Image: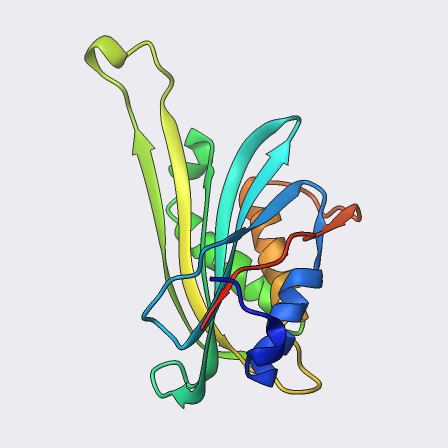
Length: 194
């Protein structure tokens, strides 16, 4: 259900404004996503496909949750939840440090962008699929998945923008893309739930 920003709590409306006006790297195609229900009183979500040379090479999802009363588990009144995945090479999947590197992509991006947060948590999953039998002609595939959440510390001076920049950096990193200055705004109206 889409709601006018005017009837949302001011802190959440400001965060949704940051999300809807953020200028995305031109290789990251972002669209609104129906936010989850029953997790928080207010939520907004976006879906991202990372495209290079016309091919989807990675994907991600970012959910912004808000509980004006605060949430003891979160350690605040906002929570960012993300899922990002990408194919990786078989050499990368054999690296026993890949999961640690994947986690550092997120924490380093948050630090680099000056995004203040607490309560970070998540899992990194690496998988390798080897085809057999009638499927043996298919290529072996390997993937990394990052599932993470953190509580952004937002106030009048600290906005969601630094967290969005960090999430964009994570998406570029998981896709193996260098930084790019070409940016595209999210033009559609974001669906938010109350």
